[in-house]
Length: 139
Image (cartoon, rainbow, N blue to C red):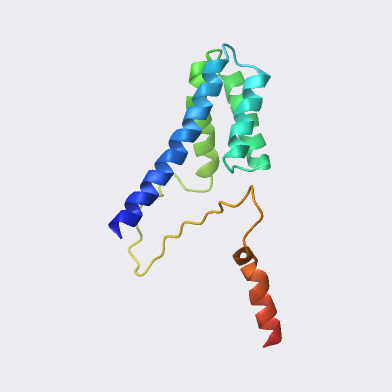
């Protein structure tokens, strides 16, 4: 079990560092904050499974925050991007609630879900909800 957790941690670390590295490369490649840089950030977000609507929302909020605070230095963009993403993620969580606190009630379940076949044809197992409905109709 320990090796499974270690393996998961390594994979998540690689994904996180890859995502952050791509953002950093994009920001450093541009000497100024411009539409091309925002387009690249949006493309990176979409390629990292953020979704087009969410990527557009994040980039629009990022543009707004940078404009309001009159930021001209591209090196600060990553900090603002992290703040925007955190604001979206935690918008429905009350400030006094600890998001990572483990509940006192037992048993509880922590589930991680993911989909790795977004660039390929989905496996047959991806249609299990349809198969369950078919089985329910037959019985």
